[in-house]
Image (tube, rainbow, N blue to C red):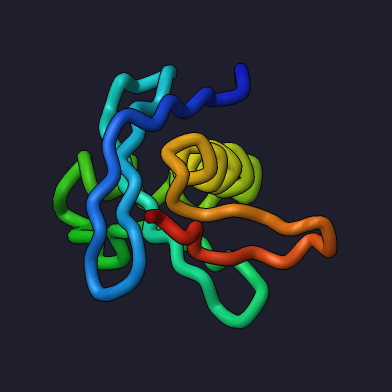
Amino acid sequence: EEQAMYKADKLEKQNGQWAVRMRRSQDRKLYWMNVWIEGNDVGVDWNQDIFHTDDPEDRHRSKVQDSCPEFSDASSEAIGYLEKAGEIKQDEHGDWHKADKA
């Protein structure tokens, strides 16, 4: 099975963290990831964590989100998108920070 590609296209700020929306190339569906700064680290997790087993759409999303390569690709895209948007930055020591916006 070919590797999924994610393309972020939107961000929303909420409670000091971000939600990043992206489209997955294989199924053309939209997925959201939450991103936050905790200490000097960046945290990432899927936005959706409740799935209804009687809903085929939810079963599909659950399967996608349980995959480590999917998580890795999607989280990299979400972090990169926030960096490009000037929301977060990594310093020369590898520590993550919220970008200071003037």
